[in-house]
Structure formats: structure tokens, C-alpha cells
Image 1: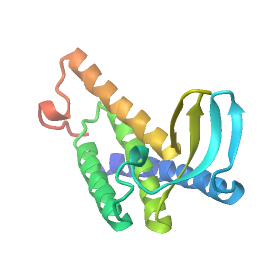
Image 2: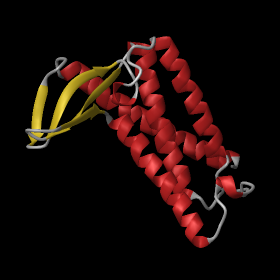
Image 3: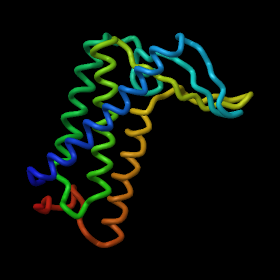
Length: 168
């Protein structure tokens, strides 16, 4: 990946992380903990704190330990992102979303000791995990990376794992 591309995607990563932090700050300052605001019959804002990672997994692990694991995952994803070819636009955008979301959640973990969650999908008999914008970025980003791999496969081109990365 060229230095220009790295700079552009680095800026996207920073913007995604900033957007996540701005929304979390609004939730932290304007909603008491555990307050619920119904938006639609199936969607609410619910101020919550997650001491684990996705779906509260590893919530018993120390904050420092989780932060180290998260930082290692961010470095690995960054390595994969750097290996994308110039034509893999969807994958590059996907990796920027993943990294922006991961950095946003890592900032929470390092500064607060937990991650602020607030998006709550539910019905009267079922509820989904509470999550945040960073989690949305990570999920959409993963979907874009998978989409790019599928498109490359359909075109008969090797993806990142099928050969050398193409220079920019």
C-alpha cells in the first residue's frame, strides 16, 4: 500500500474512531446509566457498560489483559489491511471501519475501564446484545472484507491470501 493510501485510510480510521467517541461521550453525559429511551417498538437507546468484549465475553478478564489482546488484534488487522491490493477498495474500506471501531472501543477500555454501549434491539419476548457505533463499524467492515473476497473469487483474481499483494 502506498504512503498516500496509508494516509487516506489512516484519516478514515481516525474519523471513524472520533465519530464513535463523540456519540459515546453524548451517551455518557446525557443519559444516566441504565436509562432506556424507546425509539421504535424494537429499538431503544440503553446506556450500558461492557467490561468484556463482544457480547460481554471475557468480562472477568482484567482491563489491562483485554487491552493488550485488543491492541494485538488491531495490529494484526492493520497488517492484513496493508497487504490489500490497490483494486481491493471494498476490503480497504472494510479494514478502515474495523480498525476505527476497534480503536474507538480500545480508547474506552484504556480511559474508562469499560466500553460504553447504547444500541438495543429487542421485542417483547426477545432481546439482542447491547452494542455501540464502533461495533457497527466492525461488523459492516467485516462484511465488506468478505464481500471483496467473494468478488475477487468470482472474478478469478487472487485475494490477499491467494498471492502477492498488488502494489498501488
